[in-house]
Image 1 (cartoon, protein in one colour):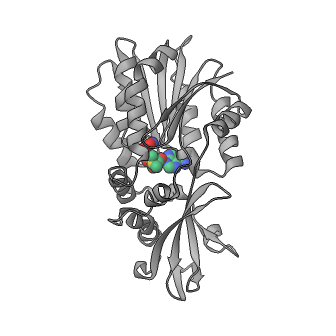
Image 2 (cartoon, rainbow, N blue to C red):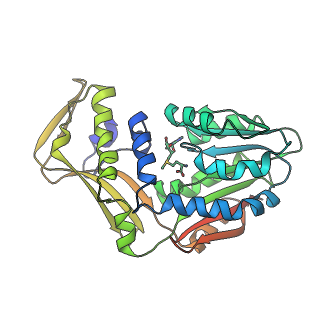
Image 3 (tube, rainbow, N blue to C red):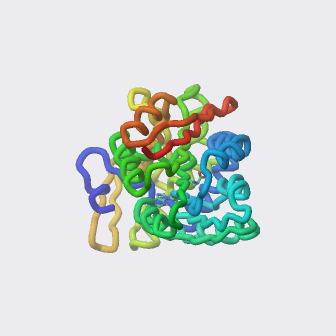
Length: 304
Ligand SMILES: C[S@@+](CC[C@H](N)C(=O)[O-])C[C@H]1O[C@@H](n2cnc3c(N)ncnc32)[C@H](O)[C@@H]1O
């Protein structure tokens, strides 16, 4: 936080800090907004292809989901795998609130052991892979186009690290939001109700609460814009005045009127870009399922 807020040039904060209890609840609300088509596209694809996915990943002992949120998406597919197989589902998330919800909501799936892991993606995955039974495989879910929050080289490095935690034959199901009409992409991050604005501003509220800072939320404005060259939506918090805020009397952050704090990137993809990136990271792309209503892809990636 200190490094991001005292940077010369563009100030920035990591998007992973959005998800305190309130941020988690606000994200859940975002998934229900008419403008935010990503979640419904992911759910449609999972419902449509759950049977085929189960065929492709036989002899599973562990399903690990990176950034599971509420687990609503896993709920669509886990019953297809679980029958009598003695399957373990590991939701991995930094948010304790998300994991509590996950455990509660998926409790009624028969023959499923739920092992929530409150950790970052990769450390959580390393813990989950220890639960693999000999001679069985692992399915990793990375949904919601969360891969799009990473800069492209980081995304590729991330996939490589996931691959290193897996064995040949294991599968990664990767969701990616696709490039589409500008209006639709922008509306998804600029909803009319202002829920995304609240989600974005809550980052400063969290810093106020947890780090004893004194940001005046009334003097920031949510902004989402599309960077066509980089192929990404950028979310920013724009300062509407010259202001300074202290954090726990240790750090003074100064912002000029009009200056922004960059809080999130959401890269958009073309299906061929996903295949190239996965191939470089050591996965074979077996199939890609694309939602036509809201251009969005799920790629079934097999570890080589
Ligand atoms: C955009 S939400 C997506 C939730 C769900 N996968 C979906 O598709 O709707 C991202 C989730 O990942 C979690 N998260 C973000 N960064 C993380 C990280 N570095 N390690 C673990 N979890 C993370 C957040 O707490 C949040 O629940």
